[in-house]
Structure formats: C-alpha cells, structure tokens
Image 1 (spheres, one colour):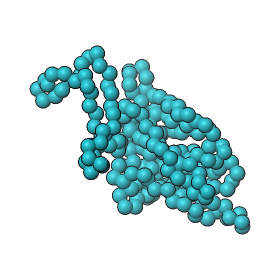
Image 2 (cartoon, one colour; image 1 turned 120 degrees about the vertical axis):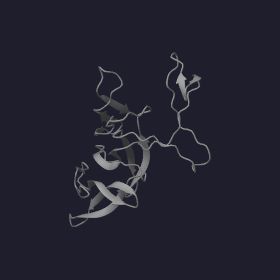
Image 3 (cartoon, helix red, strand yellow; image 1 turned 90 degrees about the horizontal axis):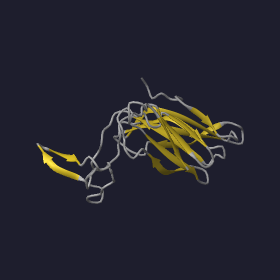
Length: 193
C-alpha cells in the first residue's frame, strides 16, 4: 500500500508553496503527513516543512484532503479514520439505572462535553470508525503552525467528516458524505467562519 505519497497536491495562488500529502506515511505511531515545499531563487521546490499528524495512535490518515486559502494564509488538512476525540459524555438528564445501563430522559437533549479528570493522564477515547477530523494551520513567517481542530460535536461512525474541503480567506467548508442523523439526511456540509 505504501505511504500514498502525492495522494493530494495543492499549490498556493502565488506558486511559492507546494503541499504534498502522504496519508499512509508513518512515524512514531502517527499516521499521515503533509510535506510543504517552497520555491527557491532558482525556481526549484525544496522541502521547507513536514507537518505530522497532530495526534498519535488515532487511526487517522492525516492528509486525506487538503486546501489552502486564496490568500495563502490558512492551510486546512483532513484526516479520515477512527475518532480520537478524548472525552467522556455525561448527561445531567440521565435517569434510572435499567439493568446495567443509564437511560436518558426522553425530553433531554444529548449534551456531550469535554471532561478533564486529572491533567491529561487519564483519557477516554471514542473509537468510531471513519468519523474524521479537520485541522487548520496558519502561515507564520516561513512555516505553517497548528491553529485548531474542527470537528462535529456529535461524532458519528462512518461520518467521513473531512472527506472533502473548501477554504476561502474567511471560512472553511467541510464535507461529510457519510453523515446519517436521520434516514432522510445522508450527508452534511459544515461551515466555519
């Protein structure tokens, strides 16, 4: 299978930066990387930066899709695979223990929330196959720096969140063709500004 080097290629509008994904490349328990090449004075592209998957052991193929904003300041990279979202979900409207499970009050809404127990030494992971995540990076002086992770608040298995991306100078659109909240809705587009 290899590292799928050049699975996706994107160049900024000026032609100064070339981004090459390798979503199956592995190093130190991280899967996927994006290689950033910068054009030098001789008009050759030389390796300027390697952006690794921000999370290790998450089952993601970092670099599934990639986009750069028209102004070249925002780089967006998606990862498909198992969810790595470290959180525990508690619902204040849980009621009665039935058998070995708490059941939700039918009138309550699901309210997932990030929960920290002891400064990060205990993590709860929700492993949901093909859920996905999207990461934004902003251009610094010469390199791209991690800015934030975009994700759906209610992660779904086979959601394929981040399967497709589009970025403008002020917004990010994330496609989730596997989204399935209701029988009539099989896909979704998320808009972040």
